[in-house]
Amino acid sequence: MGIAIMLHLLGVVVWVGGMFFAHRALRPAAAELLAPPQRLPLWGSVFSHFFPWVWVSVGLILSSGLYMIMLQGGFKAVSLSVHAMSGIGLVMTLVFCFVYFVPYGKLVHAIADQEWKKGAEALATIRKLIGLNLSLGLITIIISVMSRIVFL
Image (cartoon, rainbow, N blue to C red):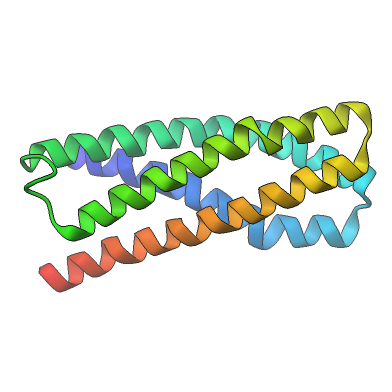
């Protein structure tokens, strides 16, 4: 189970940490320093590098989480906190899939066509959804830590 926990945590660190950096550090700096014709291609490039890591992270988190649940006897045998983390993780995965397949696709096309208004709209949608997923990820981390403190 130790390797599963390690893989699970690595996935969480990459995904949630990446969202935190992008949302709370890179986004404000890019908005301060760059006009849309420079800012939008930056974000397109950032996402093209970050999103493959998110796919890997999602795969690690879901597979290691399910593995650990099965080791404990399945969903009937695990605590409420594990159910909460699983549910939130699935919602986060669905939000990411939507971001990747809808507004990110629009952003890529807008950049290619130099349609800065459409690109800004797509980026605003991505920003809001990443903010949502970041909040959900931080809540999940809090649930994980608090469940260890309360039940140890």
